[in-house]
Image (cartoon, rainbow, N blue to C red; front, top):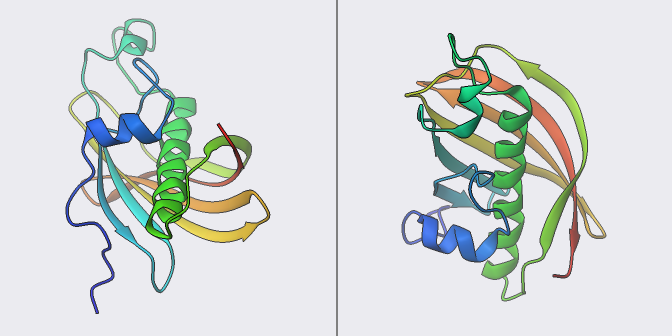
Length: 155
């Protein structure tokens, strides 16, 4: 049985339909895979370029992607997972808001030129709240991780 329920990657045009974020705060470029069994899991991609507006001030001589934006990228991937899981069940997706961040850890810095792979697993759903385990990788090295709680609300 093929666990991947997507016929192919979800490109940016479709992501823009599902997420309310826009430049400069849309922090995922492509959804690479979605699995529904044995657990709900999504893998997304963020291309980090020197043209990102935050590099002008964080830190100009040594550009590093801010940790809060790494967490935001993982949260957007979690929102895509929740939305796509609803759509595959024939339901309408909601807008998802970040409620809580736990156990955030930053192992390495993310710099211009990196391709960040965001790996999100839905651990639990209760009413309109979802709990997610998230990791960010570059070249198979874990750069950051956290646990998120997100709440869905009708748009």
